[in-house]
Amino acid sequence: MKIPITWLLLFSAPNCFAQSNPVNYPVSKTKATQIVAAVLKTSPVIDGHNDLFIKYMDCKSCPRDLKDYRIDSMNKGHTDIPKLRKGGAGAVLMNVFGNDSSLLSYHKAWDLLYRMEQAYQRDIKIAGSAAEMRTAMKEGRIAFLPILEGAVRLKDDPALLRTYYKLGLRSVTFAYKTNGLADGSDDSAKHNGISAIGRDMIKEMNRLGVLIDMSHISAKAMNDILDVTQSPVIFSHSNVKALCNVNRNVPDDVLIRLKQNRGIIMLTFVPYFVKNEHTLWLDAGDTVYYKAKAEYPGQKEKVDSIMEKWEGENEEPVVTVADMANHFDYVKKLIGVDYIGMAGDFDGIQFTIRGLENAGTYPNLLTELARRGWTVAELKKITSENFLRVFEDVEKKAALLREN
Figure (spheres, rainbow, N blue to C red):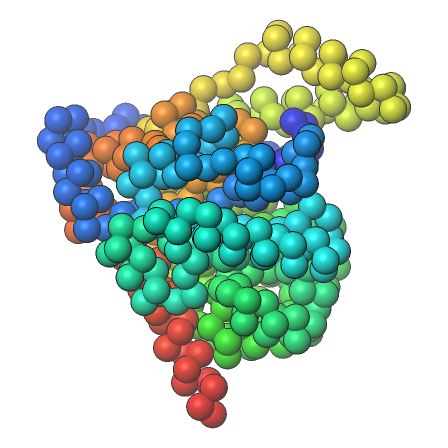
């Protein structure tokens, strides 16, 4: 998820439900740590969404090149190779995008991706299939699976989808905001779900073997996609609406259908999609921010000063690893562990969960779950196995569709 400025997100009357039930910890922290270490040896983390490209394409000094922002040493961002290694990462769904909406900029982003692989070839491998992801992880490299957050760059044209598939594109978020294919979760509805063109695009994505990502779309669009798709779908970075009632999160009825579809929800480390207090704090900040912008048009320093004062007087609520783990427990209880994954949304978020601040912190969540009694087998499913199963099912269905 991309946040260009601090107070950009708009929510439709958020009303999150606090998670107040006491947590039972049947496993000691020492034992849980040992369990997690065993899990990560054979099932490294596959992160459902990463926005590292913001550091090259959407920053104050952007666009910039690899030499201007290195990832082979610890940097100030959420993502670099040392952090990924520390976190036990085996693969990342990497959002590839340019510094504007033009095709030229998008093509330059693809060039940057392949040059990144070349620059860090001992650590990074671009993968185009589940098998290639498995191979890269066995070799000790981190697989980058190229994805597109927001199908608007496809310009409603299956020809562009096919072209980018050949470049390596393997997952598409169907809509970031309302576009020609579908309605966005926090945007005005245009199609009452998905459009006729969207239906055609679903069929072509199924045929190619491109993962359909339902994060960021409206609940009606989610259901419409599930009505049409012949392949499993993913939520690359979304949470549970029953625990935090923002439009961006997934309702229970869709989660139940996700199980029937044999897809996966990759629960995301975004504090304002996790806990009531943080969402309401952010919403209050939005109100102050837009009021200041209206009163002082074009006066960025004045608006920044107002926001700095407001933030100083209204402390950011703390969201913890335990709060994040509650979403994992909820989905496990509702539909089972086979349909859950993990997603940091790192470098695409301005606020972070305490204990999940960057790509080096995945084990903190896994340890929390292990302390709650999650087994080695269950943890392996949410780190790697569930996503690989979904991806392989998508590839198998694509092969069958291409035969007919």
